[in-house]
Length: 81
Image (cartoon, rainbow, N blue to C red; front, side, top):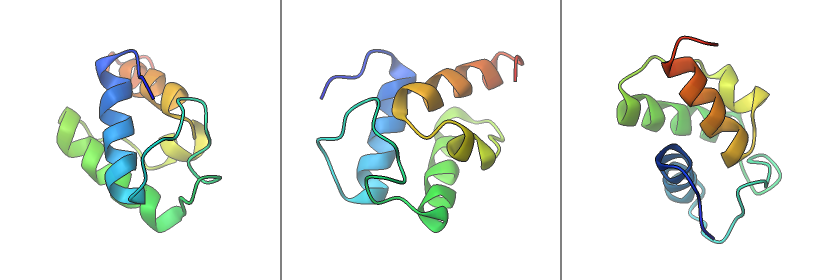
């Protein structure tokens, strides 16, 4: 699957590693494809490391697709969230 922005690619990479799964689309729900709250914590940690920002854990719950989460991360980094 192709992901458009660098942020989408980073989110998809984190999901693939944590879920041990490839082939999900940008609009698939993290929790519907095998994610849970513990894995969401691990994804958030990996994304914090990747972006050097204190991303809140709630982002993945409020924005559970790659596309939505990438937009939220970009907004958070820009100070808009």
